[in-house]
Length: 121
Length: 107
Image 1 (cartoon, one colour):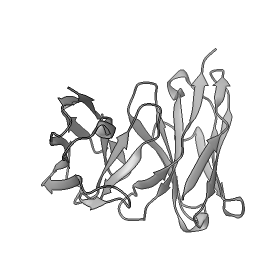
Image 2 (cartoon, rainbow over the protein chains, first blue to last red):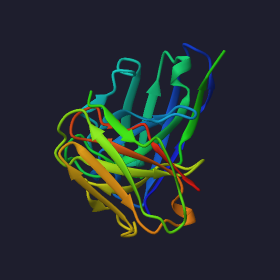
Image 3 (spheres, chains in turn purple, cyan):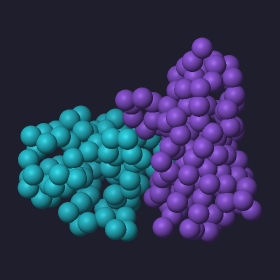
Image 4 (cartoon, one colour):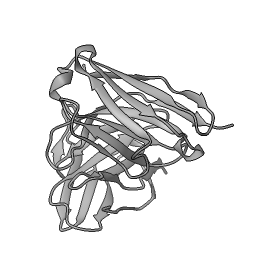
């Protein structure tokens, strides 16, 4: 059973930084692109970033480009999201998700349970 | 960015009913359309990809179709566990974008 477990969320002040992690298991992590997707409280889903199997190339939503960095460690079966210059509007549940295949820009077949990031002073 | 417009935003139905949710893309996306189900406090769950292909383990009561840039999710014989919020997603072009969601409620 594919499992994705996010961690690292919490309360951070505006302008601060946070690093999210996602531990993957029960599949060959290095074979799959991975994504970060977020959901603001009571809101819809927003795709943030993709990373290829090797770590490059990467893609970002305009809303986070230059502030967030996606990375992975295939030896540790782990995905990361470094978030800098955080703003109140970054408050959301952050999900990591496996990319099904490389058709189009990729959709997601398995999602983690999410980790909550709250940006507030 | 490609805009995905879902309708209706909310829908009331009874157990046993068949319902249809529609998603319209602002431009052509060929068949790169997925549907997700989300229950309160849970992560989204993949139902359908490539317009009409069922994710492993998803019952055949869920089906998808398309006509041009209009995409449809049909859920037949509604059961209590089907009442949730449903999202469409286009993945033809970066960035992948989601519809605003359709909340399916018990009448």
